Structure formats: C-alpha cells, structure tokens
Length: 82
Image 1 (cartoon, one colour):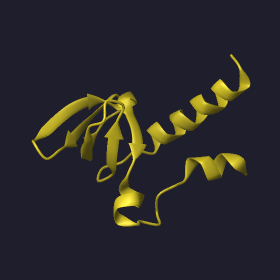
Image 2 (tube, rainbow, N blue to C red; image 1 turned 180 degrees about the horizontal axis):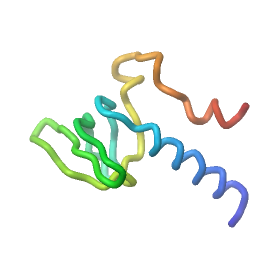
Image 3 (cartoon, rainbow, N blue to C red; image 1 turned 45 degrees about the vertical axis):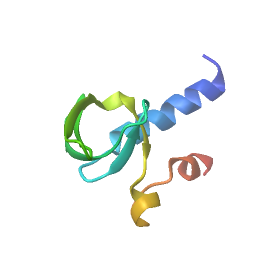
Image 4 (cartoon, one colour; image 1 turned 90 degrees about the horizontal axis):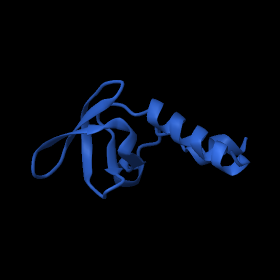
C-alpha cells in the first residue's frame, strides 16, 4: 500500500477504538445520532426517529466536540502530526 493510505487507515483504526457511549456521530451515509450502546462490532445509535443498530466501521465523524464544545475529545489529526 501507498504510505498516505496506511497513515489514513491508522487514523481510522484509532478513531474506531476510541468511540464510546454518549458520542454524537455521523455515519458514512449521513445519519446523525448519539451512541447509546457499543460492542466490538456493532453500536446502537439513537436518532430523532428512533434507535438503529449499525456496524461500528461505518461511523465516519464524531460531532460531540463540535456540538457541545467538549474539550475531552481527541483530535486524531493533531495527534498524528506529533
């Protein structure tokens, strides 16, 4: 694999490992919600219309910091530049 692809995969893997209950996220398909339960492969997402069970790997962004200005959220891009 090309170096940038490997770097991107490492960032995505770290992001997936650090997901936790209560995080507000967006999926690859654009569904917004809050994680109410999470396992190794699946998570249950609470949306406006109800609850959805999704595979963990389709989560693309975390919005907790953007929506609630929470300083405890890790910025994965900054951490990689160190």
